Length: 430
Ligand SMILES: Cc1cc2nc3c(=O)[nH]c(=O)nc-3n(C[C@H](O)[C@H](O)[C@H](O)COP(=O)(O)OP(=O)(O)OC[C@H]3O[C@@H](n4cnc5c(N)ncnc54)[C@H](O)[C@@H]3O)c2cc1C
Image 1 (cartoon, helix red, strand yellow):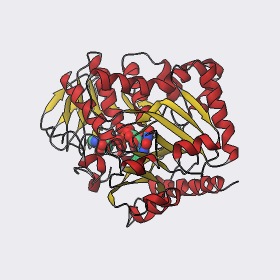
Image 2 (spheres, rainbow, N blue to C red; image 1 turned 180 degrees about the vertical axis):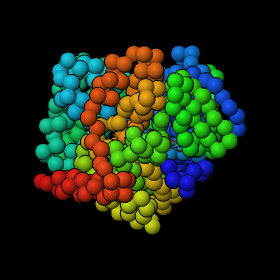
Image 3 (spheres, rainbow, N blue to C red; image 1 turned 45 degrees about the vertical axis):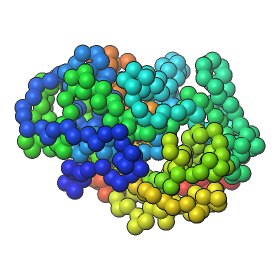
Image 4 (tube, rainbow, N blue to C red; image 1 turned 30 degrees about the vertical axis):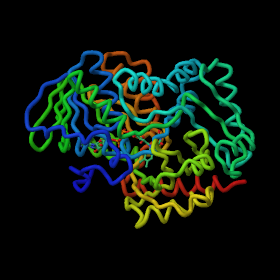
């Protein structure tokens, strides 16, 4: 995290404008002693903290900015099962881990549903997600997924869609098919993150905001250091994802930040909602560089996509994104755009999250490749299990050979940009 990223209020997103609360946790100005110190209060940090607190651990969470300030409070709100690169984990460890991975796939959805109910978190959680195929060559992947859902007796509604079915749901003829899954869905991510932090606070977790961690002291009981305080603990979790800059000797060169962008229109009237998204589901393309959209609880079109690796946001996010939305939905062209914002996703070179531990007690999980609402909750539980000494699932991911690009972040970003150009060319294939 560069100094200019530190100690900022929320970005001007639709989510910040409609947050249930503005969190105001104190700055750390003390020396604390806890069981687990967590760096970063996005979903990875907050979900881990809540799991640990539910199991009786004493936890402190240090956030450079505000709870949910990073990708967790800015994302598309699409709740989608699975973890990026999971097939590579299966490939490496073999069929014996297939059942374990399948269980993990849906675990984040379950955790979120359970927490929303248990702690009464108001985050507009809705069921329904459709993944849409732009090209016929993408259909076999959807068919294979539907077959696996069928074979494993997935207990929630799902439906493979032909061209007409996809058109009914998306109200455009741009797609040749799709897969509707009703255990997936969408939600207000900032309100989920704030609600989970509030629940964790109720269980004794201490949150500190505007308190960037500047260093880690290693040892049998490591300490995280801020400008005005320190926290000593048995274990530390680094949960900074694309904003992570600590321990670069160990973690530099694995995960690269990419900008992703969203616009929110003014609310659609009933007729336009029906002509855009009659089932009120989240929609996501299957391309490598993809567009995604959904309606917010108050009926706005939240349309996102594009990626940029320069580290600089475009001059106008609206000018970049709105034409893509208008091409699919010409009847939205006259709508005002009320909010536009971006955030950073963390992209590992091989698209597998980078999980591990440094010197035995400083744990980390970073790099969800823009697919993290569900995955962060899975990994929060995996990290909590590992800290308790159950390493089965942790070792699956920590045992992956993550690719490291030597030569620093700038060079790495250029490499990733080249890689994405390759993916873009792949998307253009018929
Ligand atoms: C525009 C956008 C759209 C997306 N859409 C979706 C979607 O629809 N569905 C989906 O599943 N995923 C989506 N994602 C990805 C998803 O949001 C992320 O994978 C997920 O939120 C990552 O959570 P995290 O907690 O690991 O990281 P973050 O939420 O980025 O949190 C990291 C936190 O760590 C803090 N931090 C970093 N360094 C320090 C330090 N030294 N000291 C203290 N604090 C520190 C940062 O301030 C930040 O708050 C999207 C991402 C973006 C940007």
